[in-house]
Length: 360
Image (spheres, helix red, strand yellow):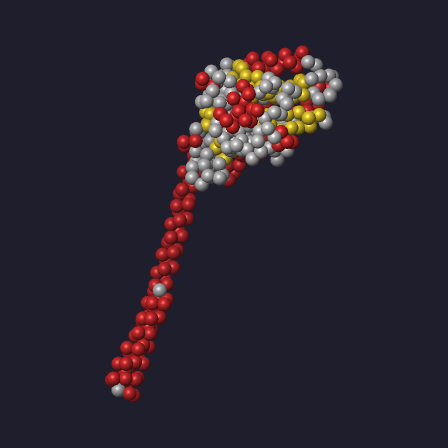
C-alpha cells in the first residue's frame, strides 16, 4: 500500500472504525488560500553536476553538524541518501535510461502541506512567501508530520534525550528570505541548476525551456500540480528518449521514477486525506489521559489490596508463632521449673527478633 492509499484509508475509515462510539470531527475537502506571489525554486536536473555545494551552504547557514565525509567527496552521491534531522538537503545520483543525473532533495514546501494538517499542536505554518515554517515550541514529538509527508522530509532528533524536535529545510526563511537574499543553496549553485523566483514565473520558465529544447526534457513540471502543488519544482531529463515519446504519459512517468520522484501522488493536496483521521485527535488527546489514569488507579488498587492481604497473613503468622512459644514455655515450666522456662522464653524471643531482622 503506497502512502496516498494509506492516508486515504486513514481519512475514510481508520479512526472512525477504531473508535466507533466516538464523535469524529467532519472531514471536509480543504483548499489552502494559495498565494499567487509566493516564491519557489525550479531545479533543472539536466544542469546539476552533483558538486554538493548546495549541501555545504545549507550546513553552514543552518549551523548543522558536518558530515562524516567532506562535501568535496562526491562518491557519497552514488548511494541514495535520505534527509535527516541534521542533513536538510542532499544530492543523489540517479540512472535515467542508463545516463547519470543528479537531483537535489529538500523540503518541497507544499502549497497545502500535509505536515501542517497532521500537526494538532499547530507547529507548522504555510507562509505567504512560500515557506512551510516549523516552530517547535509546542511540539510534543508525536511525529505525525513524518507519517503524513508524502516526500519523507521531516527528520526527528532521536539522539536527544531532552526536548527532541523535528528538523527540516526552512527555505532560509529567517536567515535569508527576510533579508531579501536568495536561499543559501540557490546562491551556492555554480551552474544555475536552481532558479529562485515567483512560483508563477518559474512555471513559465520551465515551460519555455521544455518548448525551446525538444528532446532535452520530459514534457512535465514536477511539483506544478503534484500533491496539490509545491514551491520546489523539478525539470526531469528526457535522457535519450525520442522527441515524440517524451510527451507520452508512460514515458514521462518512467523518467520521473528513474529520477526518484513519486508519480502516484496525484494532484489533490495530501492534506485532504489526513483530515478525517486527524479530526479525532483532540478527542484522543483528551481520552488517553483518562484511559491511562484509570489503568494506573486500577494497578495501584491491586497493589494496595495485595499489600493488605500480605500484611494480614504476616500478622496471622506472628500470632501463631507467639501462641506456639507460649505453649512451649508453659511445657518447660511444668517439667523443669520457672527458671528454665524464663531462659527458654528469652532465647526464643531473641531468635524471633533476629529472624524478623533478616526478613526485613
